[in-house]
Image (cartoon, rainbow over all chains, first blue to last red; front, top):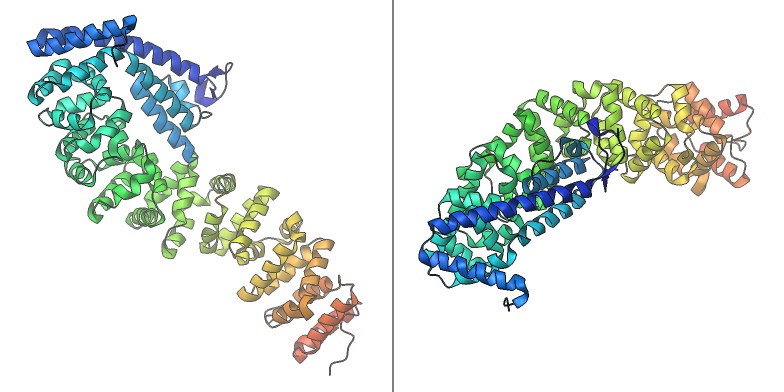
Length: 74
Length: 478
């Protein structure tokens, strides 16, 4: 799965792996989205009702314990 | 070549997930659509992992909220967080939560969500909300995201969407991004004739939509393909002329060839005489594409519809393109029971060109020569057949004569019944080819056949044989 890099699809430089390029860009997008999610969560907390904040807090708290290996998903 | 369009659709979908790709990559053509799709799924899986446990827990908590509160929670979370919650929610619950949500919110969530997840949820969302969201996305030119869901919409949602989306070219764009293009035919069958005609004409008159139109034409069955092709042509042949030029410039002959094969005979005549096909290099590209994409059978009706001058150009062009292409054409014509077209094209060649054609290896094969003889008899092209036989190699001529003599000269007898238009040169050529026979039983067979011919045919053959010094028909006429 190799795309050639160059004008009009003609090879002008060594082959570069297309999958590698996509995965790198996907990783950057993932990092960017992680930041966006954090920001959205902050905004959501501010506009949420008590019940909403409770649900969100429950999710966040459980998530923390889940990442700490509590495996309370089950 | 349609693979190029499939790759383009996949690259656009990938860009919708990870952001715009370097244009250099978008031009390349060495990655398959399947490979690009696999990378997109990988990227979507990566995105789904961001805070995955938190969203899973949040979804569990949301399950216990009253419906109104849960919908409110979605609004408070915003489209991005809601989109990330969707994989963890029961589809039925999603349908209920979505009901009070505004269209703009649903559209924004669609833009952020994993399309694979959305496709499992669509059936649970009200058709009017789906249609309104789709219309909203089209208005914002988010064709990729809306198109990816088009093939899972229910018939009511499709009908509602068609009412709300009045931009006909946009509908072609949505079709381009469908995940399962093979379902396009089912969707088109839900569109009334007037609207479908409008969509086709909108695509035909908007140059930017031509790849989409070609794509759509290539995805649907024969009946719809025929309808679209005939519709474009009957509206304005000049458009088709430009469309052919466009397909030629963009390596999209596959869809065009497949569509041309479905044209009505009267339309086919118009097509083959379009100016675009008069260009020799265009013609070469068409023939090359037909060969590369194994679409040679689609060229047969086109050859048949051409006038003699154009057939001569095609025959000459094919000859210049080399043996493998010519052999593919001949084999295909024979498989399709159209050996007569081989003779028709051969009749347009000069003697030297005919000799070049006759050097092809497959003309020393009985499975090729026999159908040619049969086709000549049936279509009345005996003069061309004899001229062609004379151009064959010695081995080819011997086989040809043997086929005529076989089965007690059955084929020779049938052929001699169609020799009214033979000129002196043709008789001389026929006798010369028959002179390749050596086996006594073959010679006896043809002598037997000849002696029962009309006096004119008998005398003509005998005279030419004697003049050539051949003792072919020694037996006395009874």
